[in-house]
Image 1 (cartoon, one colour):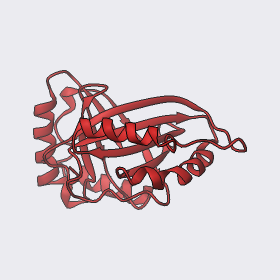
Image 2: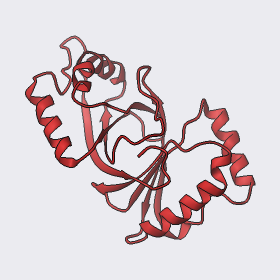
Image 3: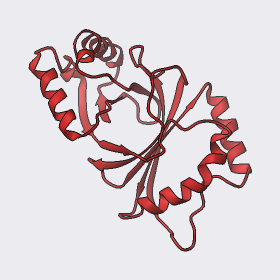
Amino acid sequence: MRTYDLKPRSLPEVLKRFGEGYENTRKKFSPLAAFWYTEIGPLNQIIHVWPYKDLAERGRIRAEAVASGAWPPKIGEFIVSMQSDIMVPWNDSPLLEPGSVGPYFEMRTYTLSPGDQPKVQKAWAGALPARQKLSPVIATWFSEIGGLNKFVHIWPYKTLDQRNSIREQAISSGNWPPKMSSEAPYTTVAQESKILLAAPFSPLK
C-alpha cells in the first residue's frame, strides 16, 4: 500500500499521468488492486494498492517495470511525501477483486500496542459476522513492513448517509465495536479514518 501526499490542486494531473502510465505500461507486469484519493480526512492524498504473493515477486515485478523505462509515472513534481507499507491480510480477509462496491470507501487505521495484533484478531473474529450483516468489510490487514503495529480495515458504502446509518445500527446493536476480553486486553494507541473515492482507472470502484 503506497500513500503519496500531493501538492494542492495537482490531483487531476496526477490521476491523468498515473492512469496513462498504468494502462499503457505498468498493467502489463501486474495488476493494480485499487487506486483511491482522499475526499474527507487528510486531503491531497492518493493511495494505491498492489497485490503480490511475496516480497520476492514484488521486487522482481517492480524491477521489470522500472527497466521498461516507462515507469514510474512522471508525477514527481507533484509529490510532497511518500510512504510504503507492506500489509498482510488476516486469513479470512476478502481479496480486493475488481468491481463496483463503492463509490465511497472508509479506510480506518488503528495503531496498536506492540504484540496486540492476535488479541485484536480474536475480538474481531467474534464480532465481525454480525457487523457484516449490515455491510461488508473488504479488507482487514496488519502491517508487516513500514509503519508497524497498524491494523487497517476498509468498508465500502453507496453514500455517506448509508455509512452513518449503518454505523448507528451497528453501535446500537451492542455488538459493535468489538469488545476485548478481560483475559486478552489490548490497547489502541491511535486511530485514523479517511473517506476515499476511486480513480477512474481503479479496478475496484
